[in-house]
Length: 623
Image 1 (cartoon, one colour):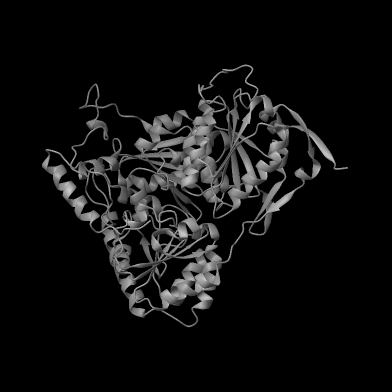
Image 2: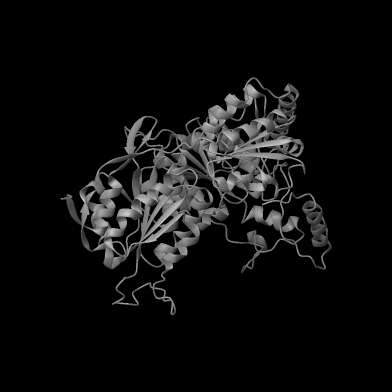
């Protein structure tokens, strides 16, 4: 007779999650490092009861906002290179829908996140319950159905036995490099309480490993033939290189074969800034060196990237005859734009490609050209970053000082706004995997929340924190989501937050005015205000101190270095605030395809439309 354990559904979920393990650098650790939770009537009476019993094994961290706590889980997963996962749980209604944005962030970035939300009653006896959104023609629909569009795995448990298949399947998806993304499981209140006789073996400890699928021989052979025929090849390194742990192998391959490489936004940080084969970031927010190499490449080897428009310049960066070899764990990505697919793990594919190439190397002129272009770019970068007599510093100048005062163990964290492009160009990575730019979803508000997740990931076995996340955030994103400054003070996870105050949404104002529209509703001074000439200035330093952080307003660029040294020495999260220029941006990068009105009386908009039409004529056509 099969041994059974009688538990409520909620208790069984928690016990199963506690029994899952993984290996990181040869050490066996819990697969689920903890839970971010805000409790309400949908998860407080049953799920919280189960979590309370195991709090020393599976710690629960109290969030301040459901979206930000789930974003912190996303940052943690990225810091752990998808090898360890956090859970986020909410109640029904707005608590659940708040997490949809975080699910979208995890989905776009192919990152694992387990979401457990309360749900309405399956028996419908008390309907409509508090926070229930009623669908007149589909009574089984709840707000949790909104997660379907932003989840890799979605389920609603309507019988306690269903977790026997649902939980393993959720883990399968989150740990598969090809399918990796958020898993959502809705937990109706009346089903959480029900007891069921679960097979005891369901709760036996299991150690999961990340699969490393090897490529098909014929795909490798086809890729080899294309590379051997190439005269000006270029490698694009994506986030999949980092998650595969293939950064070192890629760097060695590039040097050995004489092929220069660039990085996507998600891939930046796989190697250090001054690697001899590296040419900087790729695409709209990339370097001119990478842009020139892409425009003249005859074969592009894209590794672990989904080739989004910021990488491809909306598919205007490459020549019409450029051929692609797409190495990716997901065939969906590997087959894009008529590429030769090589489907498999990035590290395994690189190894097999290297072996199959034999003694082939690229013409040394290609690497020499790349190194010359990159040296020229760095010379220009030095000029952009150099202090001047401007009353307000540029992003590039602020980033340079912060970068200089970061240690090799610190991780730069940023997301939407002007800082993505400016850090992609200006941040010089000192050690691998110390750069996190969330730009797959370009989620304003990720910065501080993601920093909390990174700070958690930096905690060592002895309880000390190795390095700090240095969060670079604009005033716009800070105003959207900042409460996890308080979270880090409460939990003791230190980060340094540098707030660059440029008076509103600076980079979108740049796009707006660049397309001929007068500044409107982006910068504070261009918004509908009581007193437009004197908009209220937020004292960000005082606000941060009110949440328990150390904080300082930095008067000038000359004072920022000393302020960074002070921030490194404090015992808690520290916030530095500095005014920055809303109009000065680092040059370089590819063009971007955006919508511009076809009919307009403004000459500036008609000119922008003409530029866009010329750009669109250069776009590659593909799928």
